[in-house]
Amino acid sequence: MKKNQTAFRIAGKVAFWILVVFIFFYMLFPFYWAVNSSLKSEAQLQMTPATFLPVDSSGKLAPTLRNYVAIFNDGTFVRALWNSTIVAGLTTLLALSVGSFAAFAMGKLRFKGKKATLYLILSLTMFPQITVLSGLYAVITTLNLGARLSLILSYMIFTLPFTTWVLTAFFKELPAEIMQSAWVDGATPFQTFYMILLPLTAPAMVTSGLLAFIAAWNEYIFALTFTTIAPQARTIPVAISLFTGTIARQVPFGEIMAGAVVVTVPVVIMVFIFQKRIVEGLTAGAVKG
Image (tube, rainbow, N blue to C red; front, top):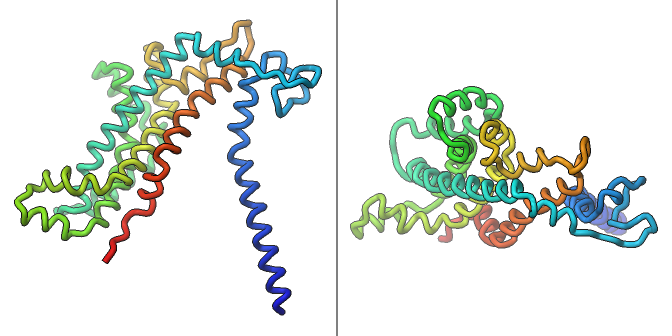
């Protein structure tokens, strides 16, 4: 009986690690293939069957940085990279600033209709972007807003409710005694918020801020719509989708893959830099007695 239990336990561990390895390769293979393709020349990309390494026709390893040089020599790509940085950065700052105030009110203050308001905020995250696109475009066109400002305000539609909902959960978990002690010492509600409670929610701010940044950085539908008449304001996803080759009817796969790698690397770096804060944000809420 013990031998059978041991055998089942070993088999379970083996199956678990096989599943982990499968998921690991399943998640990373698309990024690996993008890097592999970005290091190939046009002739290497047209080789059949496709190779898992950037090799030439003789089978010799021959990677090239030509695609990366091409995209950075393209003023459109560099400008789009700058546009994405501005739009995603300002969207994240606005979402965190407004969302933290709203979350403080939802998590720590008492007022009528608080639960209904919280669920209304949650429901806003459930609407597909395409359902509000036409009406939002009409409003922005009527107000004659700039393309970048239009994108920032539009991205707040899905980043602000998410940020508010996440931060509300963390504000709720903070002990009420902290606020009471601050009020006894003469602090106003605003001083209690930004001097005492807000620093305690730093892990949650980093977690929700990073997710809001990624959502704004990768957004495509709004960016494509609002920059149709303002090509100079195109963001990275739109610029990559509109890459054109140097030859007629040529799809520049190498340059597209190089652009995808360049866009992905900053997000990966940010995750590695803030990974400790992210873990703290995901596990915050426990109060030690």
